[in-house]
Image (cartoon, rainbow, N blue to C red; front, side, top):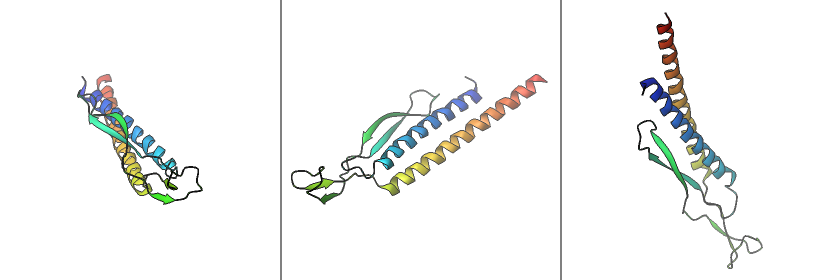
Length: 127
């Protein structure tokens, strides 16, 4: 495969992965105040082929327990009167979101650079 095309394909794969991470993180942020919600974590593995650097394999739930507070009047209360809040930390989610955003931008810059090199090569061949 053409090295420039392979570079562009890897950048696209990276952007797709980071877009998925941003989506999962935004779901976690939007459900941070939902009682009983468990944080979603995207599991990433290295792809078996050289064309794609990484692939998102599955979404798992974080097994960390949420904070329990006593509120027997709540319809979400268990038999003892406790409500379990979500285990989402907004600080962690914002850090994950920022990291995914920066990684997306890095892949986009890589794609643009490869496209520019490809265009320069075509311009040279036209002469």
